[in-house]
Structures are given as C-alpha cells and as structure tokens.
Image 1 (spheres, one colour):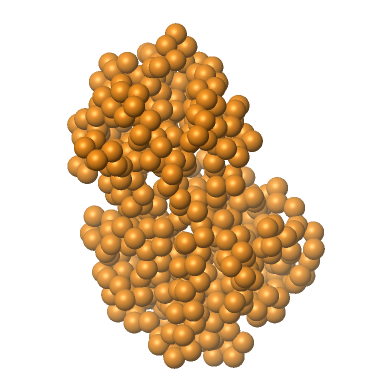
Image 2: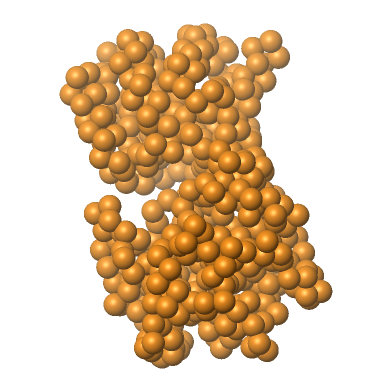
Length: 488
C-alpha cells in the first residue's frame, strides 16, 4: 500500500511537540511492514531541499493566484520526504507563531499546504490513502470532498485523520473562507461552521473517512464535554469511525542500553550506568551531591496548564519540604518559567531548571531521574512516561488519556505495576501520590521491582503500525463503497 502522510511537523526536520515524533516513527514502522510511505511537510526555514519535483503549482487563494513549488528531500529509513516550498509563508522564525503570537495568516498558509498535498497526490506521488494529522492538514479531506469532488484522479482517495490534541482547533473568522479560497458550501453547522467561526479541526472530523486518536482512553475522553472542547457532539456522531491507537516509542533512540546521548549506558540486567547518569544530572542541574540516594524527580515538558503545572505550582513548597531534588527541563508559559526560576533561587541545590528545549538534556533527565512527573490535566498519549519506564525512572502520572493506558499502578501485595497514578485533578491528590512513591523508594527491594516491571514493558511501534495498516484497509473499503461519512 502507498500511504501519504501530510503533517505540519516531523523529525528530523521540524518539531514543536509529540506530533513530530509520531510522524517520524510511524512511517518507519510501516516501511518495515512492507508499505511504501511518503511524508509531505512545509519547507520551513533551515530545511535543505534542492530537488525540484514541481517547479510551479497554481494555487487559487483569495481572488489571486500563488505559485509555490514542491521539492524532494533525502530518503530516511526508506521513507520519502516532499516539501511545499513557499518562502513567503514558511520561511519564518516560527512554525505556527512568533514570540507567542500566532501568525494571522495561518488559515491561508495551511490551506495552501493542504491544496499542495492533493496536487502532490495527483501528479508526483499517487497514494492509495492519505493520512492527515491535526488541524493544520484538515483542509485535505475538506477540499477532496468539495473542490476536488469531481476530479477523477483524487475523488476516491480515502483519508484517515488523526487528532493528536483536541485542544487545538485552528479557529478563524468567517472571512478566512474567502482569504484561503475554501468553498463557501462547507460553512454550515454540519461542516466547518463553529459558533460563527471557521473551525479547521471540525472539518477534519467531519470529512475524513476514519478518525484516530493516539490512545484508546483519549478516544473515549474526547466524546465528553470535559475533553471535547465543544466538538464532543461531532466526535460522538462519528464514533463508529473513531479508533484509538496508542502511540509507540522508537526504542532505537529511547532505550538506555542503546542511548548514545547519556554518560553511561545501562539495562535491567546491570543498572550501574543509571547511578552514573544520576550523578551527571546532579552536576548539570547544579543540584546537591552530598547524598546520592536522595530521590530526584524529573520533568521534561512544555510548560502549560494542560500539563498540570498549575498543580505543581500549588504544591511546590509543600513538596520541597520532602527530602527530594527537582530537575526541570522545558519551555512554555512565562508564569511557569518564572515559577521554576523562583524555586531554583529559593531552594538552591534543591531545584535545578533549564528553560530550553534540548534533546540531549531530555535524555539525561530520563536516565538520571528516580521518578518522572506528568500530572497532566489531559494527555492524548504522552511519550515521556513511556520513555521513563524503559529508563527505570518511575512515572507519577494522572490517570488520563495515554497516561492511564500505559501506566499501571503499583500493587505492593502482588508486586505488579509500573508507577503511581491519581485521578482527582488537585494538588492534594498529586502530593499524596508523590509521597506514596517516596515511601516505596525508601525500600530498595520494592523500588527495584517497580523499576524492572517498567523496563520490561514493550511499547514499540510494531503493534501500532499493524493496527494502522488494518485501518487504512478499512478506510479504502469504505471509500470504495462510497460510504460518505455523515456531516451531522
């Protein structure tokens, strides 16, 4: 099967979050299953791509014509990469925003990108199916079922649409329809209309053949008012075409026995390297080194309310009354960046913070921490808790989305479980759970059991890729039978 991935980011070219990891790893896994895969991305600033595949596309936009090109990148792990080359739209400092302010022409930028994806499928790399990701690519199914609805070359192309985070919709004023040349006929309550505005994500949910989320639990959660962000009714109407497939992990990059980015490799059989990594973490984050047995709690995250940092802010001073160290790596909301800077100043040697995105340091935090904090308000899948399992850094998580699917609460009586979970979204529940973990940490035998339970887990992409391949076949069958999804 030939599968075209359309996404706004993917490693090794562009990354702001977990989407980039998935769009790198899943295609590689599908290639291993015998499928032919291509990935289509915007050519952002700094991406080198010199082979021109289409020197000039004619893209209608807002009563004028644009003429971007399509270029080709190198082959990575058997996956082909193509790029939309339009410097006016994509040769910018940021991907979606600049200094925290979204680009005002994002509707035009990503509609052009979606049109170009369809043109790529027509003339350069004809696929059997298109797999789109998040609101930035939602106009692919919308345009296929409207503007291209009578085009014999692509009208039968099935689309699978993956929601990586339901909290990001791509909402624009109604005049975005005209500015981006989106057909006016799709603007109605059963289409893109959302309280008078244009909602790109809604378009992807309504017009795609199948929908997926990145964990089974999250597929259930987005059908509720708590997690649906106003689109839960749309998702429930498509429930028969909704599948939750857990993201996998690329253990070639994220496993302590293979990790070239950490000071010393280690495995479940020989954990000596973890002690070396912990010492390096203490040095790097300027943390106290007087007691190597003092537990280190690690955080690698985007700083945002979604990630539970409001809970951490509530309990920070109570938490630091415990005999612990905190190693924090990330960037995001200024209030949380300032919180951690203040904590590092108030508790020198106890709290270490790096306000940055740094892949090498992320590996060090995973390898050197004793516990890993992810108290998210919601978490579609999450990858760091899965990395933490393999690195023997015991996860402390909220029981939501993929965190709930991947972490099993430790059961002292039976010696089972891989971490610690809490359900109520409160600082008190988080603090109680951390203290539970600290109590078990004081017993070397119990702690070693929890670590080994987690390190034995396998969340590789093989299983998930097989599930996606089955879903692609289902989408092709549905499209061939002309079972157009309901737009109610």
